Length: 151
Image (cartoon, rainbow, N blue to C red; front, top):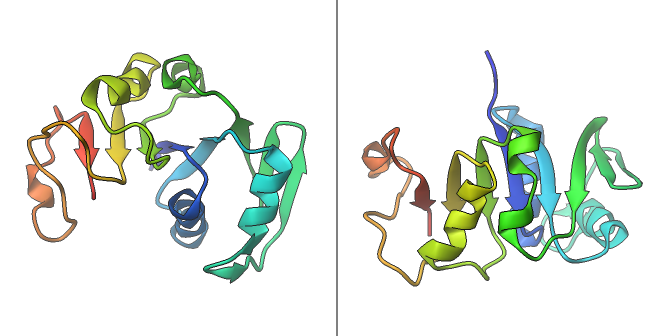
């Protein structure tokens, strides 16, 4: 079974939690993170998380590649979501967790860059057909759903 490829835009509290879940469950493969902070700060903040505590595994940064327990992914630092290499990386889903991009036209830049879907972790400023609560109304997500709010 092929697991979906995930990219995380914004490696704060939510972005770091997504990586921890990926490591625990293995339901998806994180291939890239994008954040404007220096890569060494991102690695340190993941290893020594102020909410979840110290990550028990191995965290290693080499150039623009961060490896967590031997699983490597690319670290990017791009302000414009439309310039991110989602198509080249084969990204299925982008988790938009910066809190900055909250309008449909801003979120669409991820799709234009090659992502199949965008999962939004904050309330949007524009109207979306639904906000999804897993286990409550997740049946509203269809194959045509491209922007999905989980906030």
